[in-house]
Length: 164
Image (cartoon, rainbow, N blue to C red):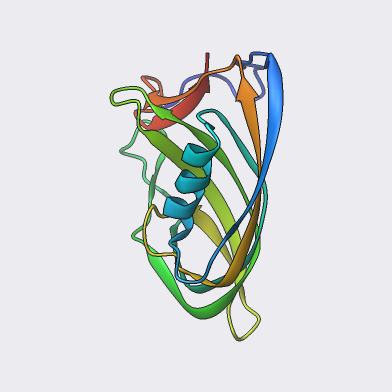
């Protein structure tokens, strides 16, 4: 279990030497995360944040946290939920970095979508299974001089992003 007292201020941060903005659009049938990674590769983005992302999906596939007292973090991710589409992609934000072990690009994105009944859903997007319906407009802030690295966090037992 996480042992730091709630309310204790603990943080890790680093100031970027420079910031670049990248704007893009994903076309129909492009998978969301694969498309974000393609934009990042095209523009040399290895560290940054998704600051805006709106559009539509054919369907959405995501997970959310559910209590699990046996895990160090006190939760685990539920099995993936799929919301049939088309779905309105209302908002997203996320982190872009690299996996410590392989150096591969990694995207951690949370989304908010609305189904065809107007019901709002949200969660942690899965790497596959989120095809663009009509369009996906995205804005990325890329950081120079900051490394965003995803690695095993000893305290929580989960793979998390950190800055270096």
